Length: 247
Length: 221
Ligand SMILES: Nc1ncnc2c1ncn2[C@@H]1O[C@H](COP(=O)(O)OP(=O)(O)OP(=O)(O)O)[C@@H](O)[C@H]1O
Ligand SMILES: [Mg+2]
View 1 (cartoon, rainbow over the protein chains, first blue to last red):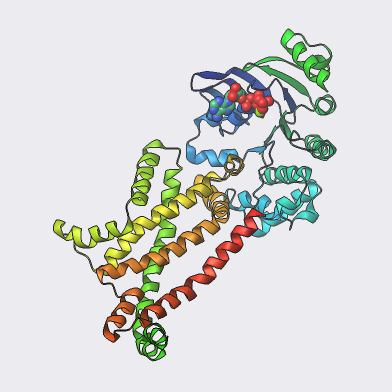
View 2 (tube, chains in turn brown, yellow):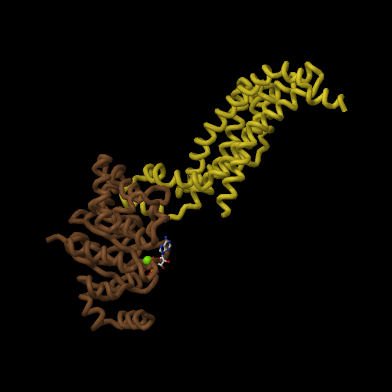
């Protein structure tokens, strides 16, 4: 079967600096791929290339078999609906209610009728346990709640892949669990997910595969047991001992 | 003492001058409507161009904004009204005033909007674009409402300045409030019409000034 997401020969330069050097990665349908790596290794840049929020220098990105690098910029907006993205900083729209946050792209980008978009938004808010906050403003919510709204906002567009860039790094420790639970449920229901995160416990429990990146390349990948329990590369070992030692 | 009251606060003369001043006020308000209305729109487009990632658009726009802010508005006005006819471009006083003040004022509004646009974290853009919103949709629904809200006190301050600015139009004999008051003064040999005009400006602008202070207090909390 074609992978849901395939990154092939992806390279990205910022000026003279090569940040990604030929990344290849396939993510199967329903798979949860967990990406780790030191700061500056290019994890965020890789994710952002997957919906062309960052324009790759070369390489291909296939979503469900279609190369989005071939898309004209007019089609790009439509193609971005296929990838949901969740950011470290939530980025809810502070001037709209929670409900409007989840409805905006549905009505404007997907052109869903308002009533249908509202029903869908309430469904998604229910799914992340926040239906009762629909009328609240984002600033009235805790960080964990805001992040769950951000997840609902992405899900409401029926994406094929969800990309998470350190979704819990900005949260107080006691709020992390609720977001990870939503993510775990989502994957259990069959969503294809790429998660950049430092939550190693979550990776052990929920990830199908762990990918270790360093210096703009994939250094090593395997099941959580393989990568965490028996890393093959020195760089992986050094990184893991550093993060687990710090924890 | 009664002499001063007679020269500045003569109610009879004020009553006589009132119709003339009301005509002037209507002209002032018309001018404000054009300059503020078009200025708010023009300034927004200038600000969008001035914050564009495209250099060929950004640089000329910023140069234009700087130029318009550096030129004294009266110089611009007299140039357009009295200078342009030498190039064969003649326009009625109202048009000349509207064009001159619009150029000046759009540049000021643009600077205010620009601060508002730049105060937004880039994450707002990214979140919107990541959900498939186009550039114009992102601007209309996400960026501009927040940018405007962030600079509302400054937009209002600038609007107050515009109302005051319109009194310069009396220089080219446009029959706005100050011009009419001065006219009434020269006819009656009495300064009371000027005092009345000042009072009208005050009534018009004082609530706006209060509002700006309220905003600013709220923001500083
Ligand atoms: N817009 C940009 N312009 C220039 N350089 C950039 C830009 N975005 C990222 N970089 C550089 O690219 C490299 C990779 O950044 P990236 O954010 O992808 O790393 P990361 O693995 O996500 O790191 P972190 O764990 O700190 O989030 C870094 O050296 C960064 O400075
Ligand atoms: Mg990052």
